[in-house]
Length: 595
Ligand code: GTP
Ligand code: SPV
Ligand code: MN
Image (cartoon, rainbow, N blue to C red; front, side):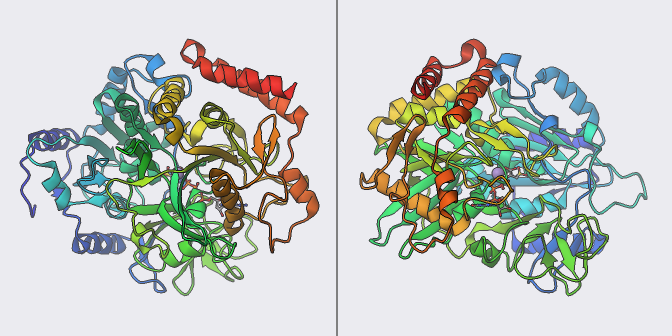
């Protein structure tokens, strides 16, 4: 160890876990580039990582085929009673879960080194930031955490002698017997994977997976599940939202936070290049927002992360040029394909596919193959600071004031391109009823419609009905300083399966309308579901899309919406007595307006 730790809680906990997991050695991370380089060199030597000839300081990893995305069925909220976790979470009794997992953790790090990762979610010492410490036996996780969080020695300094932190215990769950050779991506079989949360204790236990949100515990586990529970107790918000700053040609700034489910466009929107002349977008965050009411009475947001964990497939200079520029160096790629000249490739990248590549399963691949070269949830992990349009205020400790909230999802029908809520409660109703077709970011079936309120179904660390109530109460506290609320769907499809809306940079046209609504300048028509722009309210200059598409994108089909209201009613029913009456009233009002 290169530094001294005199935080008693930390030293005790590390000792306790070491006795349980029995690693060969313990290593305290300092967070330096040297340390990162040494760990990477070790993983290259062992065959776990492939350095990319075409990109400086970039590495490719291939995961085990059973470990490619978040596993919601193995994710648990362990509260004393089932009701505290609510009907949308997997609940287990905390004592039972601890007994099961303690047995799994026993000796699970044999043959491996245990790394201690002190990290800060949010700029170190920001009033909104929180400290966590992750113990892990995965050097891949250490390197990823160095990109995604502020990590290392400086955090130990901020923690001090009696500072508190959120303990995050992680093991890939693959101990090595004496002399046993390691595999490139160690992990445990599905039935032994657990991603567990104890919100009452601010404690996280993860076992058996090395991938993404299952293993980088600062992200979904701490910054969303544990933080959402803390936020409801303490009166702030932890949301699955990107944060961006939009500037109009006059230089006026708008801050927008948008919640879309996994693989539904947050990273893309956060760094979009507006197609409307004179408008500029700057990135603050691409996945998570922590927000507090500031002394000025407005809601201020920070990005608790310091890196991007983005979906690679579909990312190109045409769709997301700023992401392409960001990943030129210092990037970890996971489950992308490897080209013969030592670069990464994925489906949807610019240009023709390579004639030959090594696919994410380490097999030979040519364009004639029926399976994709990159896994659909292949990812890049990159420092946020490398984004060419990162906002100069992205690390401002007090955050930026939010003007606009956007909710949305991936729906091929029913939902219009954009709708403005009548007021806060109506907007919360839209958040609470958001639905989306499932994607490859989650293990399971793809393309199935499910309700995903506030894009938080997999990430809310307590009863979702109480979460809805928390949103309503935040609105009461914010009063006329509350952000305006909009609902979007970039993913409408024609009956023959083509996108009705071009999306990406063209989404700026929709954002412009929102900003002008805030200013009271843009028009709208009143419909049963909210305010919708007419074609002439949107700036469509230079956009060439069929008239028929626009008509479908901006229309409200009353019959479809009556069916939608019935489905919302069913969805709400599961919450029982805890469900806020104010949202039931919203549903009744919608039914009345639909007639
Ligand atoms: P997570 O990291 O899983 O939370 O995902 P995300 O919400 O950040 O989604 P991301 O921006 O990575 O986009 C996921 C997929 O949606 C990619 O394949 C994108 O190319 C695609 N996508 C993003 N924005 C749009 C859009 O406006 N239109 C269309 N058609 N596709 C989009
Ligand atoms: C998501 O699924 O919303 C992600 C990826 O951002 S992961 O971190 O793996 O959860
Ligand atoms: Mn996400």
